[in-house]
Length: 163
Image 1 (spheres, one colour):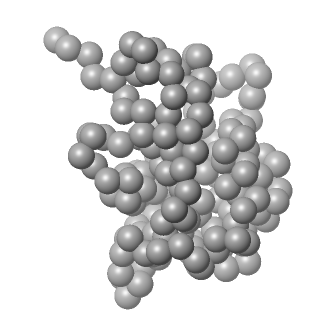
Image 2 (cartoon, rainbow, N blue to C red; image 1 turned 90 degrees about the vertical axis):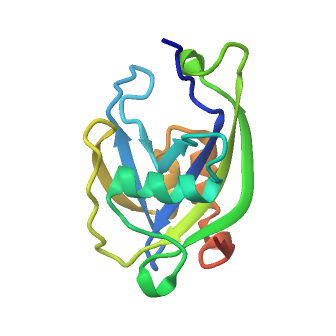
């Protein structure tokens, strides 16, 4: 049986309220260097053909239970921030990728939800969640690209393009 490797193309989705409180979720993985591994919604494409937009919508629903999409009449709208980060994959996760793959391309999105939106975590991936003001959220993030995205929220909240 051939091993399936992760695709080195992923999304980072900042979920936030009108007051710019950001949803952070804690990963199930314990890491002695980062015991409180807080992050926004992230995830890799399932297939090379899957669009970043489809990945973002799928990952938000899988990880938080929040349904979002394209139509503002049917719920929160996913906004493409038209930003990408390219970064080296952490050495402890390189085994998940094909041999020779060292970098990941991460596409950024945002989705505004009403305050007090219910969150249903995927228990195999995350253990806790919290809402934090955007700068406090940035300070809690393990990933530098995630922290930067949280701190940029005022620049992108309500902007970008619906997908």
